[in-house]
Each structure stands twice: as structure tokens, then as C-alpha cells.
Length: 318
Image (tube, rainbow, N blue to C red; front, side):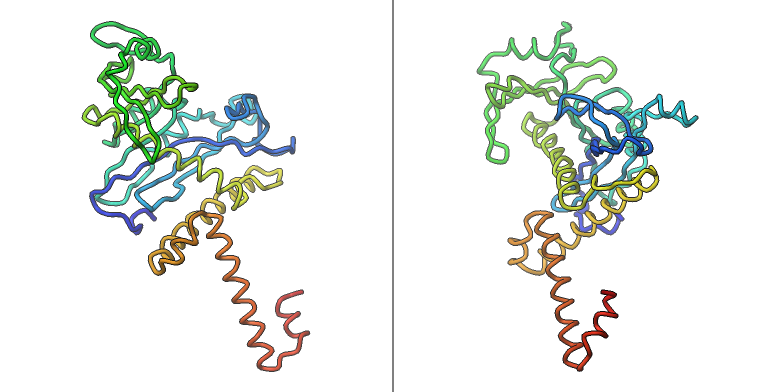
């Protein structure tokens, strides 16, 4: 799949790692359980799936998915238990990028650990992530957490930059992190009420703005989850068998990929379509409209050849 995608040789693609919870109500669904939802601030019932998503310029598509099943359930069913970190590592190791491209793996603070960093390093790729406010670092031989470090910075050490029309005050420098090594740490002041945000990358040569830009690509996977749930029914299934749910998720992933490729192809052929097909929802409506047009054209041709309504009913099975 990735080998035939329209990406430029020498370009940089981003492999995004995250997980999402498909909230359910049925208590008899196989492999469903209570999982903590950071957006809700509480545990919710459903399926937790770990996924990877690839973005390179205007080309993007979901790569893989793995169902996370709690250890207690695995032990009960005598199955091998795998953490979300292990599932993410397997997807990173299996990913094959388009030939001749560079890869940056982006993930949030929950996935920021030695195992993920080592998996990325083993592939010879770069990574970028966000760090929790209590993360320990060592600077000039002194150990402190990133919040204390940021609080001691002078205002003149921050540089204001614009990223997608939004202003950020950034300060970047090299620090050492336990089990990770030397990294580029970027302290960001985004909104006064939000306080500091901390971004980390193995690319010591990147500027603070480059680190932030790379991490902001990670937002694409959040948009994918939203679109897949709203427009493709990623979590709109009601079945007890876990295998059925897995098949459903893969169908939603494939539908997203086909629609993304259709949008890219249509936009290359028409400037008007480029303006009209701005979102996945636009593409879904476009496909639906085209299907209705084909149906009307087909019915018109049938009546033109004097087909009886009963014949059309029979052919449409209505």
C-alpha cells in the first residue's frame, strides 16, 4: 500500500501512535472492559484499540490497529497479555514507509517510555513527543523536573513564533533524561491559563519551532478518530463476538483510506472539487451524491427502453 502512494522521494512522513476507546453499552461484548478515558476523566466501558496513522504532506492513511485486552481478561481466557506499549511497538516494527522517505514517530506523553524510544531507534527513525510536567531531567549536572526548570527561565530566553496562525513562546535546549539519553527539550508557553507545555525529541539539531511543528502533526490522528467515528461508524457496532468488532474496525479503516485517496485524486483533477472536498464528511456526501446520480441515470435509461416499474422493483430488490 505505502509503496504506491503519491509521496515525494526524500520527504518526511510521520507515523502517529495513539489509542482510542470505542464506547459501548452492551455488557456482553467480548473483550470489552472499563478503560480510563482522559477526555471524560473517568473509566468508561468499551473497546480500547491502539492504532498507527501515517501522514506525509497531503497523503495520509491509517496503518494498523490492535485491540488492547486487560490482563485479567487474558488470564481468564488463557491468552497472552500484551500492554498498550507492546502493541504500539509491534506496529512500529511492522511499519514499512514509502521508499526513499524519512520517518518521524510522534506520540503523546502516555507512550513516552524507553521501550517506544528504543523501538524507534532500532528502525533508524526520529521521534517527537510531549513530556509530563513532573518529568525529571538533568541540566548542567543538576537534576530537576521540567516544571521547576521552566519556572526558573527568564522571559528573554523565550522566543515568540507563529505556528498555523497561533503564537507560541518557546525556549529549547539540550538536557539528559534517564533511560532516554540526551534529548532536545522545548518549553512552550501557549496560553496563560494552560501554563507550560513540554515537547521532547531525539533531534538535537532541530530548532524549538521545528520540534513543535513536528509534534503538532500528531493532531491528525485525533482528527482521524473523530472523522472515523462520526462519518464511518468506527464505534457504531452492536455485536457480541470480538472477531466481528475487529472486522468492523478494519472495514472502517479501509473505507477511510479509499476516501482519502479518492479525495486526493479528485482534487488533482478539479480546482472546484479541491474547494468542495475539504473534509472527510464532504467526501462522504460527494460519494453519496454520485451514487444517487448513477441510480437516477440507470432508472432513466430503463424507462427510456420502456422497462416496466415491476421490472425495476425486481432488479432493485424492493
